[in-house]
Length: 401
Image (cartoon, rainbow, N blue to C red; front, side):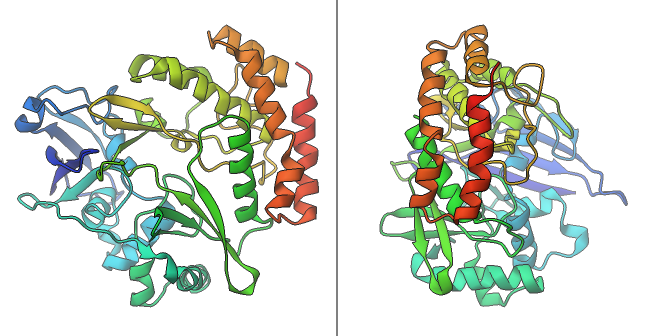
């Protein structure tokens, strides 16, 4: 049995002991059961808000599940992606028997993204910043290369490659800081067949031009012609605290293989969001952008809500790329098909779903995405990569409904 106190950092920086988690020991197949409950003090606190408004309403009693499945997916949200989990295991020397999610949460403590910290009963969180100085970026890139190549890195480098990672994906990355704030640094991978770093930077710029809200970002040039993409963290509040992070996967309780539509996300925003009149058009705009750019990796952990005492709102868009895998089909279904319609069909879907100004949104996004070749060139994406994805984007822009 493993027990953990769950602490929540508010946007103001205040910390509340929000709940208690208990998990049984895993059996030979890695199966275990979990139980969570809010603390009485948290339920009585006027600043309290549900960690998941759909699955974990502010009520007394236990919420139970197998592993960290629904309704406790929001706790699994706190863990880093595959890259970060790999580092977490190495950093703490966790044996195979202690690599299940509860042990990873205990090892993570409060070092990851978001507002949750997982501590031994009776322990109290303390301010801790495990991000690396931006001056160490060259060292971080080399450590990431060594980890990909050899499977491990030296202890000093392991400490630099902080366990906390981005909400989605399994690419090399680290948390860094400079005088301008805290960033997620994304590196190229030895498995890359295209310039992923340059393409993601260009995609973020296109999204901004298309009217999407995106985090601040910039490219850093490194030795040997390499580059790193720095993306500003959006879980850090201006008041010095944290914003709670909740994936749409957790909100929709979508475990395992799921078949869901963008309309399901819009319904969830209208039901559980604090500002659906703002966030529904924002999500629809992101859907149109994904369709026209070819961002087929539109799974539910690439959509997040940011929570606080005033409720949950849609996060900025992130992890945007054209169809680098040549999949053509999207993870999320647009209406009845995972293949998106053209701009006219997307506008019709918006009208069907009650999105005000859907045709205008589609026109604005199409105008932004049409500048792919120009913007990708500005970010020094190789011309062969630009030509490859420009053909697919042109096909999507000109597709008839």
